[in-house]
View 1 (cartoon, rainbow, N blue to C red):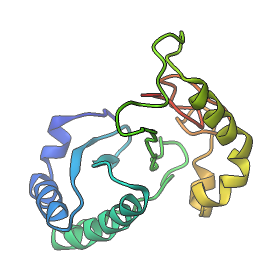
View 2: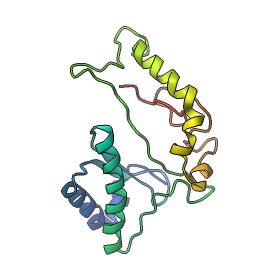
View 3: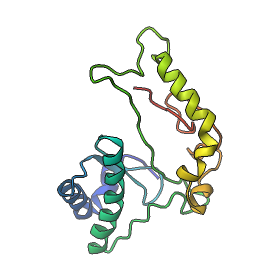
Length: 172
């Protein structure tokens, strides 16, 4: 159940080394790969890019990881909630907005460091969160993950560094 374990990831070292090397060859840079809370749960941080490229990378990562896993007798599932009483896992997207020179979501003078533009952007996300549901919870298993107390967003909310919030946990 321990996240960020160097020992647990070492149990399948060759599999994870293959993911790191082969995903790079497919143009999917992996910035980090580590254990998360829950048995068999791992997190991969895919390098930043433009939205369409990033969507392609996500699909290539899932497909490639399954192909690589088959060689090692491992079948990655990417299942949001494999067991009712254990923490689930999911994907999340980090979002930012830049004019090419500065982070337009950041305001050093604001106590929360949030620009007015970011506050408006966040309000729009929260207002439309339930309408986004079919896109962000596309399967029955995705809905099973929506349980209070299991680091899953169960209602439209936001928070600073809060894993139960629907919207931004980290603003910059």
